[in-house]
Image (cartoon, rainbow, N blue to C red; front, side):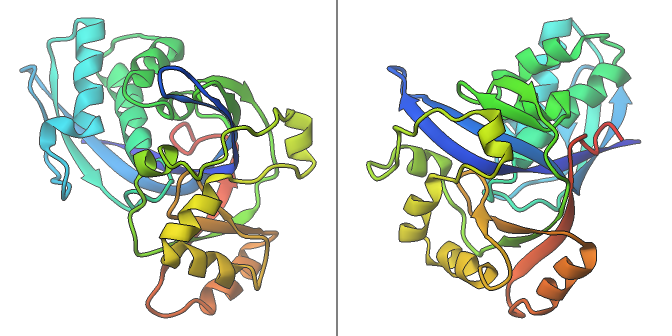
Length: 273
């Protein structure tokens, strides 16, 4: 089997500037990868069947983004080969770390090579966008400033600190947050230079902490040590530190019943390293 990494991402900030007539939100955000990853393994088959051998609680086999990505690539490239796929899962589901989108992107990149489709990253990103707005960022594999619904990407090079990431014991529904009447949807447009100088926040935080006490508690706890932020629509929250040692000191103080991890920020995706 061939093994490929499927990394987490974090949103360093998230602003919503408007809502379109089709219901989608125009946003501005900055993505950075973490060296904390799921692992996908692929075994090619002569028949065209695609099977994910790892069951995911609450997700039907054919609804999994891994399977959907593989089948979309087959259809686009006219491939009649198949694959048996195994997932070693580390990223928490519903945490705002992009696990499903990352899995889909790794599937596209890996099978593009293994099936010898010879598609460009632009073509893979086009296939991925139909699966989810975050899939292209994982396909391209570079930290990026994103606009539109998240598909208009500009490469950026923010600092690459160490992060403590806490995964509160709750699952936040992205659809619920984006449909909330409490959500701020009229942020003024910001520049990349403004972001890099420290501007920006996650406007979804205000809504999430009202309805998910575990997220509010994690943010309050992290605030003892650094400026905490939430990624995406939650539930994971994070803070950055200059060294692995500083991050480890915070981890050592973590309440014993909490789930968390330390990861290095990466402007180039571990998928391509």
